[in-house]
Image (cartoon, rainbow over all chains, first blue to last red; front, side, top):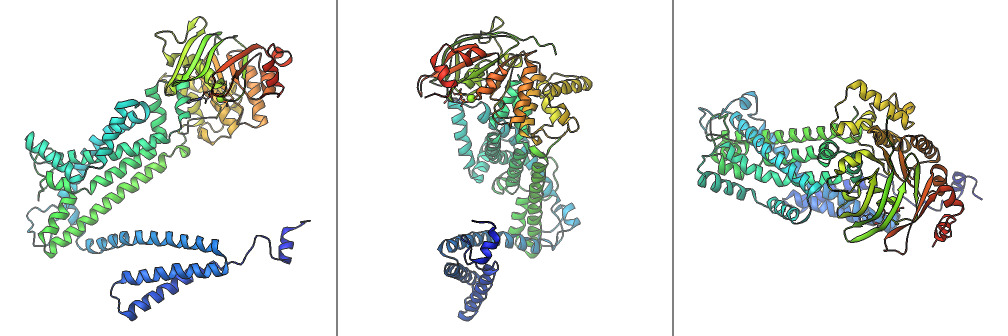
Amino acid sequence: MSQSVTSQSAAKPSQFGRRRLPRWTPAVIALVAVLVGTGVGVGAGLSSHIQWGLIALLLFVVVNYAVTAAVEGPRQAKDRVVTSLVWACFIIAVVPLYSLVESTIAKGVKVLDGNFLTHSMDGVITTGPGGGVYHALVGTVEQVALASLMAVPIGLLTAVYLVEYGRGRLAKAVTFFVDVMTGVPSIVAGLFVLSFWILILGFGYSGFAGSLALAILMIPVVVRSTEEMLKLVPNELREASLALGVPKWRTIIKVVLPTSIGGITTGVMLAVARITGETAPVLLLVFGNQLINFNPFSGAQSSLPYYVYEQYAAGNPASYDRAWAAALVLIAFVMILNLVARGIARWKAPTSSGR
Amino acid sequence: MISVAKRIDVSGLSAYYGAHLAIEDISMTVEPRSVTAFIGPSGCGKSTFLRTLNRMHEVVPGGRVEGKVLLDDENLYGAGVDPVTVRRTVGMVFQRPNPFPTMSIYDNVAAGLRLNGVAKRKAELDALVEKSLKGANLWNEVKDRLGKPGAGLSGGQQQRLCIARAIAVEPQVLLMDEPCSALDPISTLAVEDLIGELKERFTIVIVTHNMQQAARVSDRTAFFNLAAVGKPGKLVEIDETQRIFSNPSVQATEDYISGRFG
Ligand SMILES: Nc1ncnc2c1ncn2[C@@H]1O[C@H](COP(=O)(O)OP(=O)(O)OP(=O)(O)O)[C@@H](O)[C@H]1O
Ligand SMILES: [Mg+2]
């Protein structure tokens, strides 16, 4: 009966085919919608560009639905509407990010140069130009490194305990406290360290005090992400190792952790990125400093978020420029950490690694 | 390989998952240097029983065992017995091939020693890996790519890799839980041939749903059954494979083998 499908469908319309809009239809509708939106905006004298965009968006969705429903049918029309909504949400999500990065770069590059990166504010008048971010960069790197040094081992071990050993009450309690810690606002972590470490125990303001608060914020993030990664390791691998007569602790170190190391690294790096930009605890605890202080354990330090805040608060053109440049440095720092994390995750991904 | 195959004597063994009794009161003897096949309907506790023989059952949360398993007169469940040592003596191959994804073919085979922290010289380790891979009939297929990831092999090759990994630690008993259920007929044949060779050196226990396979590879066959859904599984009978398949002493066995089951 059906010798050749193609010859048959050439003769009469195929059973499954139906009328289709050309692939470029959504693009054309989008273009028209944007033009109409702009036209209406200009015509009605709407000052806000957001209103223009919303008009265009609404038009796009409605026209897209109507056209598709007329030509292709209701199911395809619904598909189109949902697709366009997803795209719209994506664009709405990306616009602020884009404009944030764009304006930071635009305002930040003015004073960002080698001199800015390698000099402190030593001897610079706040109202005048010059000076740099070096002391703040040193502070941030040291504080974040110290915080990670404390939080990563604690977080990793907690996650290993919860996934590999945790049964019963204690595990439930630990999970509960980790959840609670996740919800602790950073200012509260800062206040806690301030009252406990500085006011009660009597240690002075220092980078280390800041990193204590940062570690408190970092631990739950590390625990959560590591936990998820460890849960992804198939039980069969653990059993394969145990069945070879490998003790449980060695199984964890040699099989479970290496299998999930890529994901764990990514999680840790994201946690690091998160605390790098943390401002509140740093404001309370490191005190701020115009000079370079390499010692995080004694004396006031600066840090990038602190520096941004301080320069912006100074409220004059030169310090605004410095604030934006420092913000750009901060974003770049976090971005680099993220890229490194991705690189490590890809490099360590289980299937691709040989000997 | 100087493996001393061992005899297994099980008496009055029951296994629980939490409060659920999965197998009840099983007693049997597994002869050394022979292949014993376990057959029975799904869920009757074959895997559970197999895992009690190398103390893998207690790895499952809530897993608990009562009774005795004597390996050449030493009770695996006696006080002071280290399950880790038991598992080195009684190796296991799983239903689904599970090579370590982070390791190369070579490292997978050497894993048992490496992971146990047994330091060997490179030459010794090389020889052992080669011997194990040859023992698992895999050497010729992988000898040029020992450094490649073990997960990059075909399913049948992966299963033989897992067998090589299991025999590399030189166990005395080898437990196999449906080792061929994910394999094509050719790989199955390769594994079956391998079992035939391995029984010269090891005591082998194999779980299978394939009657022909049980008939082909095993010397003795044990039939497990459960009275009803939710009831614990029990050993119905164990005998020479030939007898089980030609003239079993229990009617249920004959029904199951001839397909007149349930
Ligand atoms: N991890 C577990 N937790 C709780 N109960 C389990 C677990 N594994 C198995 N069981 C139960 O124990 C009983 C025996 O299961 P088992 O896996 O030993 O059967 P089996 O004979 O190997 O079946 P199959 O032939 O399908 O592999 C079943 O009732 C099953 O539901
Ligand atoms: Mg099973």
